[in-house]
Length: 262
Image (cartoon, rainbow, N blue to C red; front, side):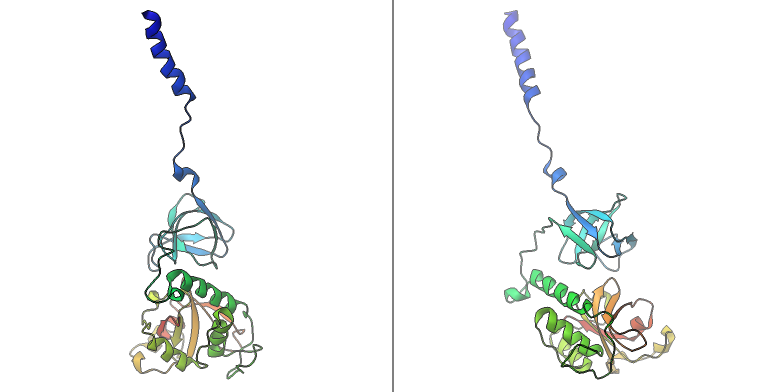
């Protein structure tokens, strides 16, 4: 009787010792990313949210989730968690999926969020090919040796996705308005949107106070890159096609409206 009891106690213990307990799936499911260009790590998935710090070029992060087409939730190399842009300009990601990625917006498949995101990346990449290309007012639309602002934007869309925009900035602005996409707060814009500006009146914000912007004429157009940066060309002295920051600069004070041309 004592022998049987001993067996009953020992056998379960041996069986327990042979069992391999699987690790939680989360432990092996993390995606990784490498920062391509310095980008803000923010407290929430919103361009206006507080910046935690800048992530530096070459820094590696763990991608915890893809919130939507524009934001990743990540863990930085110092262990801090936050949100960064999904733009290929800032991060090279691997193994990332999002529940909403296969969902489409209203309309045809070409207007789905995923397709739009891909098109935006193509347009921006096409535009960046021309960084440093000289500026020329009234440049020829038949070659890419020089650009004025609207010629450059038109070429980026043409090279990137084969879409032909109107050839001047005012017509491009009217086109964006005709799609119902115009926004007067630049913080509401997304990467790939076009931005339209009034004439330069100086670097001080006070130079633009009291101006009724709804009556102002468009004199400049740029492609918004996100994180307060624009891609455009505007003078010979500036070096041609270039990237500029707009916040707290004359660009912000001159801004009229912007929106998607897609």
